[in-house]
Amino acid sequence: MNAVETGATTSGLLRDCGLPRLEAELLLCSVLGCERVWLLAHAEEAIDTSNARSARARFARRRAGEPVSYITGRREFYGLALRVTPEVLIPRPETERLVELALERLPLVAPARVLELGTGSGAIAIALASERPGLAIVATDVSEAALALARRNACEHGAEIDFVLSDWFDALAPGQVDLIVSNPPYVAVGDAHLERGDLRFEPRVALVGGEDGLACIREIAARAQNWLRPNGWLLMEHGYDQGDRCVELLGSLGYAEVADFHDLAGQPRACAGAWRG
Ligand code: GLN
Image (cartoon, rainbow, N blue to C red; front, side, top):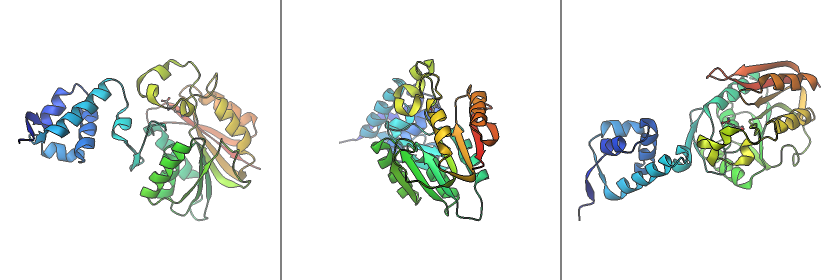
């Protein structure tokens, strides 16, 4: 029996799938278990029937809107290959900025303590642990499924992180950390973006932050003061139009050195404040 379907080649599958090249390549790689560079070097390679069928099925899911990362189960973040499932937000490139801002604020020598709130896939905490192996990191999430995934990702990257099931600070033991970092839900209820693109498939609990999107940001900013050591930092991601309100919020709560930062696309994306204690 000939398992090779006439005409199914790497380049043919990619050409006929009706998807942007990069998405098609990522999906085909996920079927073949190869790197993208392999596809280039094997453009005329015959693809057997079952792989061709799997690839076409994945292409069809993508054409129907499902995020590439949920189909492949993978996403790269800060140079790390992470697993993702529909139970967690897909890590975004703009969130890498939050990692950089955190690294800039963490003391290089002393063994610093970090708390990440709402870790999802574990992306931020694992990126920090990979960059600074000496950090003591606690990472929380309100979702058991997210924590299970984050633990698995951490394990695969040799990252030692203490994962805690907690609704923000609720289940945390009292203590003081050098830095609190979070990419909380910050999209407003009813925001039209929720009905577009990847967001349609992502967990609402990871996206929606109340009527104006700022409910979680407000709660974290107010409660973080009990967990920050003197001169510890709070760093939060926020929506493109929330920078001014976040700066005002942190200022009104008494944080010092309050500042807002842009992501690589030039959008206001993260706010920082130091707690003097
Ligand atoms: N950055 C996401 C988006 O608007 C939202 C993520 C979040 O709420 N933390 O696409």
